[in-house]
Image 1: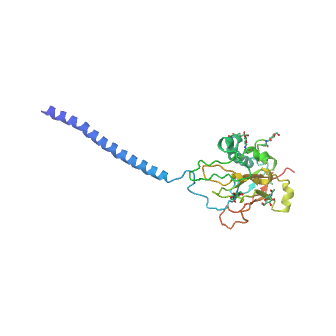
Image 2: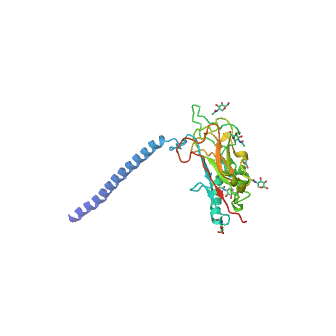
Image 3: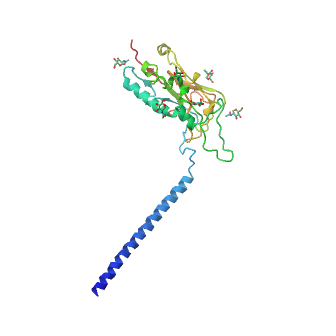
Length: 258
Ligand SMILES: *[C@@H]1O[C@H](CO)[C@@H](O)[C@H](O)[C@H]1NC(C)=O
Ligand SMILES: *[C@@H]1O[C@H](CO)[C@@H](O)[C@H](O)[C@H]1NC(C)=O
Ligand SMILES: *[C@@H]1O[C@H](CO)[C@@H](O)[C@H](O)[C@H]1NC(C)=O
Ligand SMILES: *[C@@H]1O[C@H](CO)[C@@H](O)[C@H](O)[C@H]1NC(C)=O
Ligand SMILES: *[C@@H]1O[C@H](CO)[C@@H](O)[C@H](O)[C@H]1NC(C)=O
Ligand SMILES: *[C@@H]1O[C@H](CO)[C@@H](O)[C@H](O)[C@H]1NC(C)=O
């Protein structure tokens, strides 16, 4: 009799455990399914080709590389640590512009006209950006002079237009970035200034900018000081109070060995 009873119980416990296990399996399975469904529905509402958070500016400002807090490039040639950090930043930034990378990722575009990729009824994606080859930066490409001129006290500074989605910069007319020393005496100290690409020209083909899936770059290099964008539809100074909407000045001071 006793033997029978305990035998019955032994059969019962595994069954109970199995039931509990089954319950949790279904319970968690349900939770997982619910989470996945919610996630999927949410992702359907997100367009991967348009950034969720866009630059509030309607008119682009300028930025410089190497990027410094004060937007100033100041260094002492004999203090190698400082300018080597600038060189490192430029190397990192320009890696993406290696000719091989540009050819692989971006399109060869016809210069002098906007690179329009309209969605005529059907979504025209992915949007393609135009090639900006690192070699276009000439002496400032860092390919021949690996210190970008910093070693010689003639630093290259990259001037870059901020990206603004669907902005037709220049209103069909050629644009350029021009830079001038702020003071007359600076002009003597600085000596000659060079721009790459020539004349600081920014080709229309780099506009408009469509969004995060496209890599567009517009840049010009200079050997120095206060720069502005000359484009038909970018006024001076912009009325926006936004921090980066105003063309920024940057300075250089490099001690010479005299
Ligand atoms: C770009 O080219 C330079 C010089 O040839 C090379 O040192 C660097 O590793 C390259 N960067 C990338 C990201 O390919
Ligand atoms: C970029 O460089 C590659 C190879 O060096 C060349 O085939 C391509 O045409 C260049 N693109 C532009 C826009 O100059
Ligand atoms: C680097 O120097 C070589 C030889 O002087 C020249 O042919 C080439 O155009 C230079 N490269 C750049 C990017 O300036
Ligand atoms: C630029 O010019 C072309 C040809 O004249 C014209 O079709 C186009 O609408 C113009 N684009 C802008 C943004 O003014
Ligand atoms: C730069 O643009 C301005 C205004 O569009 C123009 O007056 C000037 O001639 C241009 N400079 C060069 C070097 O192309
Ligand atoms: C640059 O650094 C050297 C060595 O640290 C120092 O002797 C010189 O005074 C510095 N020059 C300037 C302009 O600060």
